Length: 540
Image 1 (cartoon, rainbow, N blue to C red):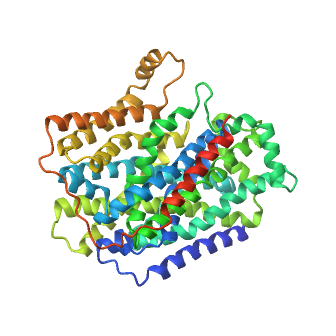
Image 2: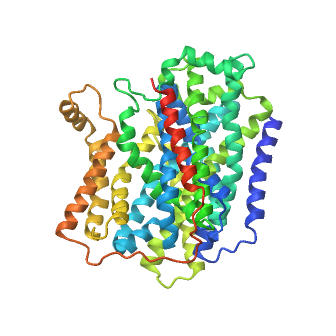
């Protein structure tokens, strides 16, 4: 126990020390300095922050749990992300940096109007508070308790343990976001990212070595032979949890929105010191994303091979913790715990920082204090972070954990993704799409998705099953694609009757060197080929 605590505190202290030393002379008296790291982030800092902003315990435990219950097809959440990140590096990022935007809503104001920016800002903030922040804390708390049996080894009940861990992790994560700004978040993400990759890859290697009597390749062959059906990456069996067809409908919408237009992700690249560094950072992260299946999917299938007679489908959240306890040497437990906490902190503090950016620039500065100084804007962001952190820490322990939590997270996020992506894409691709059209779709689109997927799910599914002559439910990602298409068509139709009053003319800045990375296109092509090859290799 002493060794576990020592290694945990050592790694956590190293992350804090490195973050402090790298930011102690970094002034926080302007919005660029606080929210974008002074536009000084290098490629590796961007890559590390992108990875850890996205990957956390909801992947380690939730996605591995889904692999335990279903097939390798759930890896689509990871592998197709690499394709969207290539699009981000080659198409979206050059346009963002040329225009000097700090937030996506800033672009929407320039393209449409101030009201559009306000609506988009509120939608982003609402989605972060309802979905990402509390779910990340809940996964972190339940995962750490399951892995290290805190409630069993103490006199605390599981509920008490959950509350203590949620508030402990939330408070620590808030410190980075509130006092350090984006630079501290990015640096801590990078250090934690190294630990996350090392620890994450170690678990399947150790498990396969145990199964293969010291040889991981023999272990992989054994698992593959015994559970060959679990390795089907297409997931195209009847009533699939994640059908192959969604890769060509809603998954495209989901990934492009998340990796190309979602503030909590895009903000890391907006802080790049140059376009070349930003492109390198995004593409490095895309390369690491291709390692994702080995960390957040394969262990779930290994756990199924080992524990299918001990765990039922309802126990899916125990699959990864059980595997870790089975294979992890005692002297690494503390390090692994620190990595787990670091992954939760990274996602939590990154989303907090993005939320503060959105509030300060899009609400406080734009609506309440147009003459605000840099210090006042930063202070408003810190207040926003504190309020959102407290709200998330109060809500997290109350979330229902029945069913797939990872799927729940994706469903909640999808409520906002389709309409928002339609508004942003038409903002880039057209000149005459009107602000009225954007505002109607931003409000009506999420309501439509909520009614289809949540409020009236049963009658909607009954109708669709009749229309398509199938006994199986239509996957929510197909409905996401339908809402996206409807949003695009609605915007074009509304704009035909009420066109934009002025034609949008992009304004470019010289604050950032926008010379592209010479190897960006070649690297992007390699990532695309590897991703497609992955599907060809594992398709059944």
